[in-house]
Amino acid sequence: MSKKTKAKKDAERKERYRIQKHHDRIERQAATKRVGNVPVVPKSVFSDEDHVFWMAHGVNYLLSDWTTGVWTPMFPPIYEGATVPVERMAEALVAKFSGAQGDWPDDGKAALAWLATTREIVYIYAAEAERRLKAKGASDARERARAPHDSTVWEVLNKIRERMSARKASDAK
Image 1 (cartoon, rainbow, N blue to C red):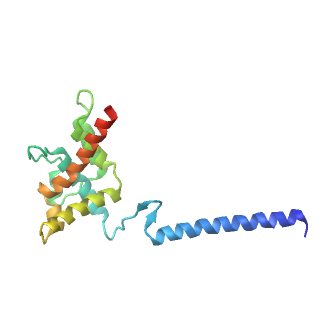
Image 2 (spheres, helix red, strand yellow):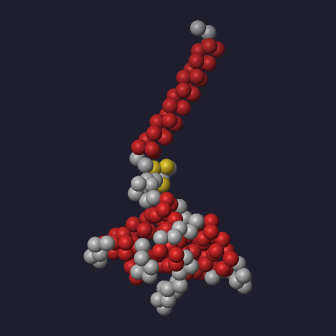
Image 3 (tube, rainbow, N blue to C red):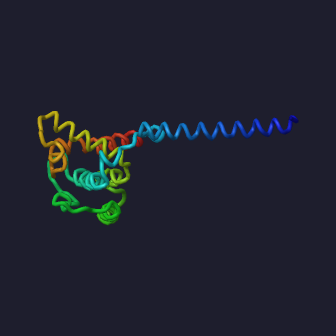
């Protein structure tokens, strides 16, 4: 076998090995329900309906006034079983805050940021709200977490607003 043929076969073997290694990595990620460093939430755990509900639910909490306890939901029909598509939620937010002079208010920014979050992040907040309700002794934590103006859920979702305010303060420095 000539050196040229041997070099060509070695290159082909190395390429097959590289491709196989890539396929093995993808299979391992699928087996562990991870894509890169992000865990994947299966739809059997957090359905599309749950995801869309929590998007609207989060906007309702973020646009309500946490400090005074005034509940002003933007999408109240979700509590009666209606579904609001995420695109319509975004359009409603833009329509509400686009006429604002200058910069959007922090509540509007937090609500828009919430709509831009991934399914996995939304699930983390929903699961945390349910976990805290269970810790307080609620036997129906899932239903209570989905109810309007629950103080525990409000507290969990208010963390988003606090984080944005902290980020805004650090960016201003």
